[in-house]
Image 1 (tube, rainbow, N blue to C red):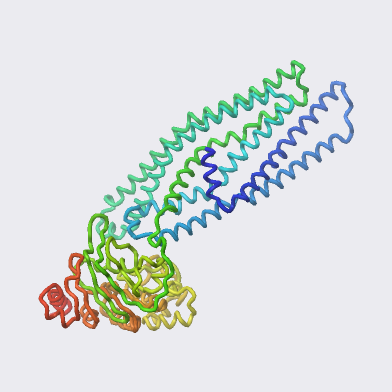
Image 2 (image 1 turned 180 degrees about the horizontal axis):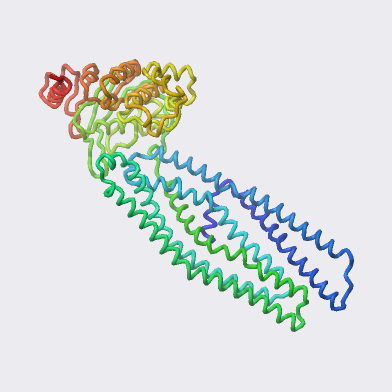
Length: 582
């Protein structure tokens, strides 16, 4: 339990000073809470002594007692206010920083990381797990540290007047600590199981939501929902079993504390009857017996939650230790933008998809890459942009190995337009200027006009301030494509990658998009993956891929004269593009 508290203290990092100051305020707050009990017991003892014919009471006693209690209460609230002011927001502030750090980490890892790690796991780390730390970490530190501070203070108060009663209270606390260790061990055993169940539930929910269109179109609700329902049931059963596992330890913890409370009163009464303890101190011990263990009783919940936070901190540590793909990279300035692949090989796991591939793309030329599905076309672009690192060989941009760059410095030189466009749930304006966050309104509009999307944007309800749905779901495919081209234009990078940019749009939109692409690629180094002859024919060179290798290379006219993959490809495309209605 205390090990988990130490890990939280390490996690808060630069906020540790505030946490310590909050603990100091809590310490004084506890003394101010104990003060009124001691003052009330002392006053009550004087009153009883006076009623039995003892020393007469001074007339100012009630006012002194009242002012003392009010003053101590005000001081207690003062210290409690500053404790909360210093501590309460630390979890929220630190969790926000951690989420940003994780986002930066995910941006800099290889895309292979997402093949090895479940998206539900990553989502759970960013949301559920960090929320546990955000909402519970400071409360648990406060419950454990300040809880034990409070009971130690009260035991010291009792010990000054009745050491045997204080010893009974101390023994109760030590025995309850044994039970709390049992709770911690139980929680350490169950937390990873519960964590795995939560991750499975998150993954099943994401899969179910993403597959709803397929579910509806095929009418297979029962099949699709089965994994989600199974994950829900497993999560419920695991959590119920875990809760039942804590019951014996919780009962033992409370039993020791309640027994100690009774023992404290009995010992104090025995001491008073023997004449070894004055009546005011007996009253003080009796009053303290009701509250002395209140702060420790609630630590059973903290012991359970701290083991959960310990598991969360372990998971976050794994994310922090993830190797960046650009670790050791630097900001490399370029003065030319030719591209070279030199004997490059690459594997997804054990399956090699690029085999000893070499080619050169001069600056300010257009290169088309064609070939059957699965031949490795998109993988070449992923290696150029360093979404993955090669297993063998070298990829260079401007005569520099891409592994010399940081991801940001490399991708500043590259704009990409994909077949499947993703737009963020944000305004059209912000989606366009994503490539250049500091762009002016005039630059955004100029890029939109060049990309042939200004007119339809102005027809939207709020123009450039219209918020598009997640993934751009409120726009058509062609509209999304043109916005992505505007985004690439605004970035104005010297290297452009077009990955099937017109493959899934209708002929009317294709004409608009082709015009937009023509404006985008002027004076750039272009790499285009395409199946349409109109896109390929004008390329300065064509790379023909098959089974992860460059099997042909040349211009359109040169390749037409060669028997091989490209000639067959052109024949098939001419048949597919030349059909007409009878």
